[in-house]
Image (cartoon, rainbow, N blue to C red; front, side, top):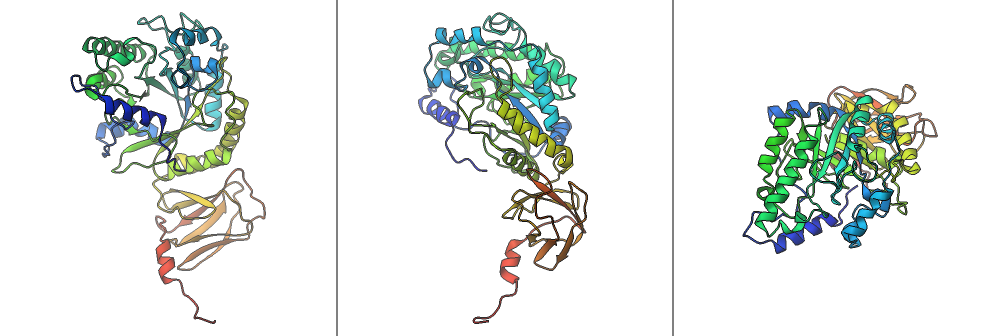
Length: 446
C-alpha cells in the first residue's frame, strides 16, 4: 500500500527550506519529522508498552473545516481570507454527546486509543484556552470540545491522545515568525503556552501528536524546551517526531513504512481522501482494505491510526460507520492475531498476508480461492491448522517447498478476510528463493 506521491506537507516544507534566512533558527526541512532511527531506551520501553499492545487507534479531525466541508486544507488551498473563514464558527455546532459516539465507535471497532485535533492548521482551539478567544468556548459550540472528548474516551476505557498543529494560519505571527525575531518570540511563547494548558487541565494524557513544524526548525520552536515541559507535566506521555525532534515514534502518513533499528512507528491514514469532513469525497476505503492495512502494520511491528472526519454537528459520516462496523466485527473474532502479534517475516502470497504470535502463523486470506490454499517456502514444520472463525481443523500436507491446506469451504467462512491459524514447531519464516532455486524441474520435452 505504498503512496509514492509528493504530499502537500512535503511540498510546503520544501518551499520553506528553499526560502529560509539564516538570521534566525527557523528553517524547516523537507521531512515530516526527524527520521533518525534508534532503538528504544528503557524509559521509552516503559512509556510505549501499552501503545505497542494497543496496535489500533482512531484519529479524529474536527474543526471549523468540518463546517466548510471542503477539506481541512481549504483555508490555504482556496486562499480564504481570515475574516471570511472565521464565520464558519457560526456553523460549527457539535451536538451534545457526539464525543461519546466517537468513543463508542472506536471501542466497537477494536481501537484502543484516540487522538483528537485540539488545534489544526486553521488555528482554532477546541478547548477553553485563556490565550486566545478563537476557541470553542467563545465561538461556535460554546463548549470545551476537548473536555468532552477526554471524558468520552475515558468512559470507554480508551487511551487519550492530543493532536496539536504547530503551524497556524490564523495567528498574526504564524508566518512572520520566520523572519522577525520579536514575532518568533511571541509565537513560540504562545505555542508553548497552549501546549502547557492542554497538558495541565485534563488529567493524564497518553499521547501528544505534533504536526507541521513550518516555518521553524527545532531550534526555532525551542523543541527541546518544549518536550522538557511536556514530560515534566506528563511523565508517562509519548510524543511523536513532528516538532523536528526524534520523539518516541515515527509517523508515516498515508503509507505503511516500517522503521528500522527497533524504532516505534505508526501509520496514519484517512478513510477516504480527506482528514477533515469533505462532503463530496466518496473515495472510501473498503473494510477489506482497512483490515489488510492493519495486518500489514501489525506484521512489521507498527500501529495503525485510522481517521474519521465528523461533520459540523459531530456526526460520523454513515460510510465511515459502515466500514468501521465491518472492521469491528472482524476484530471480535480475529483481534488477538493483531494485538498479540510479534514481528512476522513471512509475507509472500498472491491472496494472503500474515501475522505471527510465537510459533503460530496466521494466514489472513483476503482473496478466497476456495477449496485449498498454499504457502511456498515455509521454513517450519506445521503441526496443526484451523479456521479461526469456526475452529474447524484444516487438512494439510507439507514438503520442503509447499504447505498445502486442503478441504476448505468453497466460500470464505469469514468477511472481509478469513484467517487460518497454523501452529508450527518453531518460529515460522519463509524463503521463496529456496523454492525458486531448488524445487525439482522436469526435463525438456517431458
